[in-house]
Amino acid sequence: MNGRNQLMAALYAKNIREQGVAEMEKLMRNKILIIDDVDFNRDMLRIILEEDYTIVEADNGRAALDIIAQSKDGFAAILLDLLMPEMDGFEVLKELSARGITAKIPVLIISGETSVETEKKCFEMGIADFIGKPFNNMLVKKRVHNAAEVFSTKNMLEEKVAEQTKVLRKACQALKIQAEQLKKRNQEIIDLLGTVVEYRDLESGEHIHRVKEYTRILAECFMEDYPEYGLTKEKIDVIVSASALHDIGKIAIPDSILNKKGRLTKDEYEYMKSHTTKGCELLDAIKSEWDVELKKASREICRYHHERYDGKGYPEGLSGDDIPVSAQLVSVADVYDALVNERCYKEAYSTEKAFRMIVNGECGVFSPRLMACFRKVRAQFEQTAANSVA
Image 1: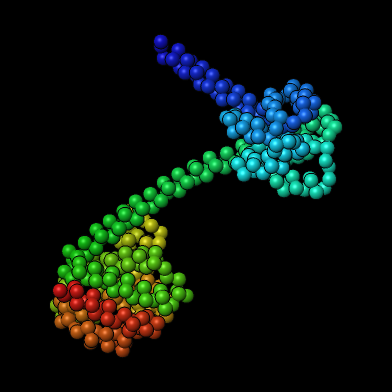
Image 2: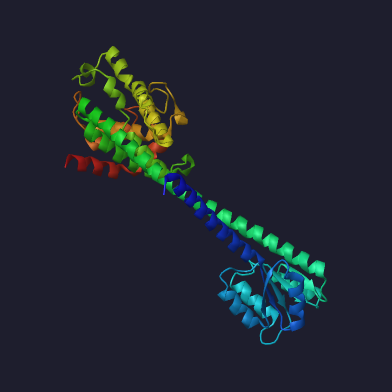
């Protein structure tokens, strides 16, 4: 068989399958179940409806429930008499409701009883409509047709919603996986950049690790004591991760300044200060896709971790809470680690002296709220410092 014939055969088979599905759906739409113990009533309803529907009959409630249970195709509607022996219409309704059938198939009550109480009770049990006795041919057809169409449309919409929900769940799962992959890529970028700084500045490798630890300790205390700042565990994770990039701008600082032993000249110090802005330029030059929150925190920390609460920091002289809280947290962590560790330009201070220098404002003024937390977590800072030496 050549390619064209194969294609035609495949299309024909597909058409047959679709026709089969359509016929099955039509059969499901066109089946009506009549439940009534009176032969005459079933005969009358069959005569009225058989032109448009395939009629299935049951002369009592128990038999009807068996038929419904065994029917794989379902029914377009169920016509139910209230007054029957063995199991009356109310009992059948109760069972249909329990099985969830009244939500999928319209049930129309056949009754000569038209009292408000009866109708109210039936509607409360989930029926779609009433067919009064004696039967009016046109009204019976209209009521059955309308109920069947309404439920058919409702069921179709519910199926569509279910399908769309399934699609959306898959899409959400895919987005979740993509977000995790993006997070992993971002972390790889951060780790790589941190390693580059480590090659330039011999202290930076361990310094970065310790700053992350100090930042987390301080941030968790700050979150608990000052919830108005909106910190969460997730935001703290982002800040801690971004803190590794606080000195990334040092890549652009010459070795003669970066690793100079002794005091920097005024011009050298001014150039060293530019590592805050140069770091942001480096981050902006990265074309890889960044997590929005991580990029924001990274830029804030990189640019503003040398700002001070009284406005005497750099590069912009921001003051108070104009300084992003992420940068404020990392600033304390960075200063503390610089104090308790040896640098090319200084000896290491004791944790006691470092603590006093920070709270007394000798390293610049920090937020009073941050200092309150710093006092609370002093022991944790000192333990982290001790562990790094060990």
